[in-house]
Structures are given as C-alpha cells and as structure tokens.
Image 1: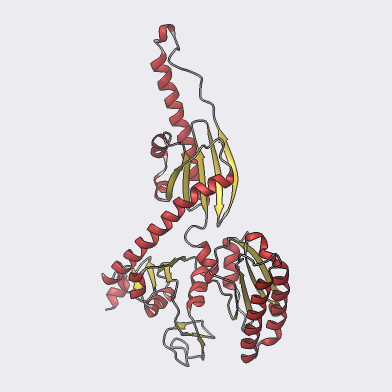
Image 2: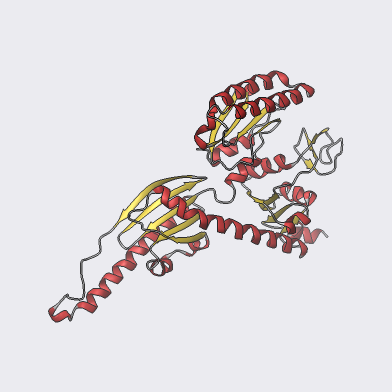
Length: 387
C-alpha cells in the first residue's frame, strides 16, 4: 500500500540526466487468458520511450529500466485486477513498485527528470487519511480507509443495564430506569466522540459515521466541533455485523458525493476570490508566483490542463514565459513540454492539497489551473506600508 510518505519520497526524487522512469499499468479485460495484448502495449510504449531517450542522450540507464518493465509486463497477467505503478532509476539505485485501485486513465510509460505523479495524485486526491466509525449503543468499530484498502484498527464496547418499564413495584420506577439507560447511552456516545477527537489530533483528516438511522440523531450532537467540520457524512449500516467490504461499499457513495460537492465549491470559491482580488489565483503565471511565495493552500488542476514552461536548473524557478535565462538568478533554463508534473511535485513537497477538477467548463474557461490561497503576500501590512 502506498503512503503519503512514499508520495513525498517520489516527489523529492530528481534525475539530473532525465532518467526517472514512471510506469502506470491499468488492467484491461483480456481477449484471452494469455494477456498478450497487455505485454505488446507495454513493449510498444517502451520502444517509443527508448527512442525519445536516445534523442536526448540518456539511453544507457533508461534502457536497463525499460527492459525490466517489459519483463514485468510479461508476468502481470492482469495483476489480479489491480492497477500498478512503478518508479525507477537504476543510475540512482532507485526502484519502487505499488499496487493501486484500478482507476488509472490507462497504461502509460514516461521518462523525465522527475517522476510523473499526475495519475497518482488523481487517485489519492482530497482525502489522505479517512476514519470510518461504526457505532451503536453498546459498541464502536473504527476503520481506516486509504485509497480502496480498508482495515479495522480498533473496537470499543460497553454494556447498558438491562432495565425496562417493569422495574419497581407496579412499574413505578420504570420512568427513572428508562432515563438512566438513556443517560448511559449519551455518555457512551460522548466517549466514542471523544475517541474520534483523539484520532483527529493524531492526524486523521476526514471522518464518516455508519450507524442505524435511529441512532444518528442521538450520536451526532456528541461530536466535537473540529470533527464535525471534517465529517463527510453518515450512512445506514448494522455496526455489529458489517464486514470491512460492506463498510467500504456503503461509504463509497458518501465519499463520491463529498468529492463532487467539494470540487464544485472550491471552483466557485477560487474564481470568486480571484475576481474580488482576494484569496484566489487563476492562470499559470499567477499560480506559479503564489507557489513560490508560499501562499497556496489548495492547488486545482483541470484534467486536460497542459502548458509549456521553463525551469531554472540552478534555483528551480518556474516561469510560464519560455526564456533562456532565469529571471531570478540569471542561470540557464530548460524547457518543459508540460509544466503539470513540476506543479504537482512542488505541491507534494510543500504539503499543499491537490484537487483534480474534471468536467467543469467554468474552470476550463479560466485556464484550467488555479489555487485557493492561505494569504496574499501583496496584501500584508508590510507590503501595504511599502506602497
């Protein structure tokens, strides 16, 4: 299972010779059990990548890595329905393999200075650490969901007293007993909510709750405000009998709805803030400047966004204008056919949230790249004093 630390490691890697190989494999429905068409596709892509590497004078290391990928393709045989990502550079003794959810846009092989992270960040976007809590009046089960892998991490239980309306002589104590049971249930729900707050403090960023519908109005008021702000929603399920696969299946529609709603909300917010000269940046030039000044909180990238740029080989400055020399330090720049990978590498290195926006004509119309800012450097008190 790939982790955020793995993604940061990949983003930190750079091959000065341009020999960083990224291979993404998306399983297809085979025409026969031999899966030969998959191997043929990879061989064709490897041949094309080698041809490009030879053009740029970096075929030595790339050839050895491409041969390893071709050998791997012969053995994949569908990879049990899982996608696969491989990142390697034999010149730097670097090789990493990861199984992924089968949601990649296709099989692809890229050789460059940095690893090609766009398909990976698209799968992993928005919700890095999710905790799903199943709760009723006597038990709570805590699951961790990462990409499409789920595991039960802990379980809490309690016991409610066996009291009913027949308690006491002629049932006279029944009302008191019932109130006592309800009070103990409230205390139990609060203890579960307190545990969720502890998990939030330990690094979980989003929560989902699964319970019987009649329990949700009782449990929801117990949630800490911080947890409530990071709640994706709730779904109906039997906490006692649900399997991990059933939990994941029930949670997926809630997560999908959250993602759709949040993307649309972020697009509206960024465009609105940019038009008000507030905490929004639109267009490549403005986003690059905000990344360099540390203003960016969330980077938004359209699915079809691509743009040329240059990067300084000395200070790393990115410029949307294709110039020979860096505007910051004066050293020579190198051309980037598509700046997307450089944007994503910068975002991952700096812990910036990445959101991929698909099917938004409104966002495409403003350039397909934007950012929600934490602050505006040019609107700080010191900046205003200097004007």
